[in-house]
Image 1: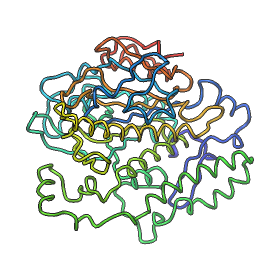
Image 2: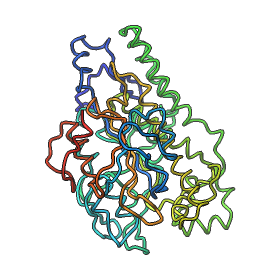
Image 3: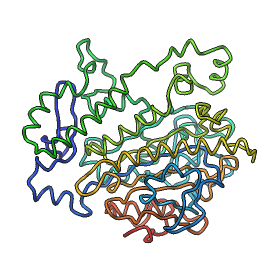
Image 4: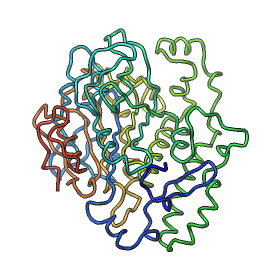
Amino acid sequence: MTNVPISRRRLLKGLGATIALPFMESLYPSKLYAAHYSSGTAPQRFACLFMPNGVHPRRWNPEKTGTDFELSPILQPLQPVKDELLILAGMMNKNSHTREDGHYTKTANFLTSMRIAKTVNAKVDSGGISVDQLMANHVGKDTFFPSLQYGLDRIRSGVDTAVGFTRLYGGTISWQGRNQPCSREIDPRMAFDRLFRNYVPGKKPLPEDPLKKSVLDLVKDDVKILEKQLGIEDQNKLGEYLEAVHSVEKRLNDKQNLKDFESHITPDIRTELKKMDLRIDEWAEYSEGVDITEKTRLMLDIIVLAFWSDASRIATFMFGNSVSNRNFSFLDGVQGSHHSISHHTEDPRMLDQYELINRWHIEQYSYLLQRLQSIQEGDKNLLDNSMILFGSGLRDGNRHSPFDLPIVMAGKGGGKFKTGQHIRYPDQSPLANLYLTMLHSMNIETDQFGDSETVLCDLLV
C-alpha cells in the first residue's frame, strides 16, 4: 500500500485491519474538496453483473422505445431506479456467434468482444483484454485494488466433451490479457477480509490473530482520533459508513442458518454431484442450506463498500458459470435448475419458471443500484458517478441465441450519460460500441475496442 498515491488521512488503521474511508470535506481544504466533486471530476466507477443462460425472450424488452416506456415483466424490480436506466436492444457480441458451442464462446468474451480460441485444459486465449481491465489499467493506480472480481461458483477445469471447449472459459469474464484470466473470489468472508484486513494470501492466522476480532474493534482507537477532526456532517457520514461495514461483517459471522451439509448428502445426491463434476465441499453452493440470495447480496454490498471508500472503482460479478445449473427451487413457482429450465422447448410452464429466475437476477441488480443510489457523494450519489452493466451472453437459452442480447446499463457515469431510455439499435449492432462509449466517458482515448464500429453518441450528454 505504500506505493499507492492515497492520503494516509483517508485510512483507519489497527493491528490487522486497514479501512479506506469515503472522501470527507473536513479532511481537505475547501478548494480541493470543491475540485474533487465538481462536475465530471468525481471518481467514475464501473461494475458488470453477468447472468448465464439468457432470458425469456418475450418478457424482457419494454413495448415502447424512447423515454415513455413501461418496464417489462422481468424488469419490473427496477421500477425504483427506472430513470437511471439505459435498456439497450438489438445488440450482439458478433465474435460469440459460432455453431461449435452454445455457452462458453458467449461467456469468456462477454467483456472482450473478441473470438476465443478452441483450446483444452489450462490453455486459454480470449482474443484480448476485457474492457473492465482496460479501465483498471487507467484508474487502478489511484486505488488500493485496481479491480475486484467476484462470483458465486468455483471456476471449473477440464474439457466439456459435448463441445470440446475447456470449462475455464465458462468461469471468467475478466481478462488482463488474451492468455491471462483474472482470478475470482467466491467466498464473501474472503472478499471482505481482503478488502478490510491486512490479509496475506496463503498465510495461516496465528492463535492470537486479529482475524478473530471485528475490524471495527481493531481500528476503534483510530476512529476516536479521527472523529475529533471531523465536522458534524462528516461524523454522520463516518458513522453511516462504519455501520455499513459492521452490518456486512455481522451477516458474515451469523452461523445460525448454516447446516451440516454432509448429513444432507444422500447417495442419490452424491451420484448427481459426481455427474456435475462437483466435489462434496461444493455442495454448499447448490443445497438448500445456503441462502444464495443472502450470499449474492453480501458480495454486492462488498462492492458497494469498495466503491464508497474508493478502495476500488472497477468490479465484475458472475451470478454463475456457463451452463450453470443452480437449483432455483427456493423461488416460489420454480421446480428445477437454471440451465435445464432455460431449455424450455416453448413449454409454457418452463417459460414461466424461466421468467421467475430472470426476475430474481434483476432483483439483485436492483438491490445493488438502490444501495449505490442511497449513498451521497457531494451533490450526487454513488450511482450517479457509476456505470453498472447487467447482461448475458445469450438472448434465449433454448436456442443459444446471441442476437438482441439482454443488456441494461444504469448510472450516469459522472454526468456523462442520458439515462431513462429504452433504445433499439439496428439488428446485430456490436455490443462493443457500448464498451467504446464507456471508455470514452472515462477519458480513455481509443479508436476501437473489439469489433466496435462507433461511439454511441445518443447515450451521451
